[in-house]
Length: 138
Ligand SMILES: [Zn+2]
Image 1 (tube, rainbow, N blue to C red):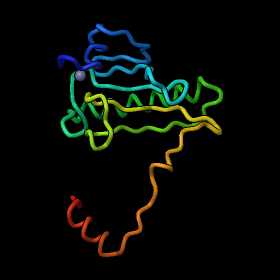
Image 2 (cartoon, helix red, strand yellow):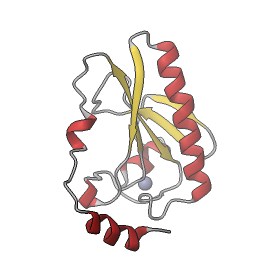
Image 3 (cartoon, rainbow, N blue to C red):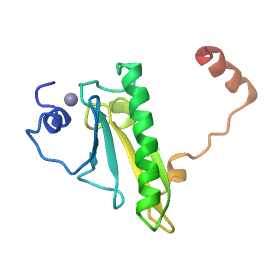
């Protein structure tokens, strides 16, 4: 529990939420500023800021829960044919609430959510690929 963390307050029931799923480690609820009807956030109950500090087992659980929720959305919402799943880490990545959260966004034909607008390609030379690869290859 971190003071003044809005998601910790939701976990602690100090703030309400529209709960989608809960287990011992994970809570999922409707985003109160949804991009689409059914837009859901999955968070760890324990406070982790983002991908850089989250416990790996908790991260695996969040991933499993995202699959459960995605399947439920597709099965239960007749017009949902897919989902987009993403999350941001760090202020530079436009993370706003500094408690790890994964977005699960139901996708409908002709919705307004355009992932590919965010994924415009850079034009890179071969040596630029090699330089960055040398730095991040594990
Ligand atoms: Zn928190």
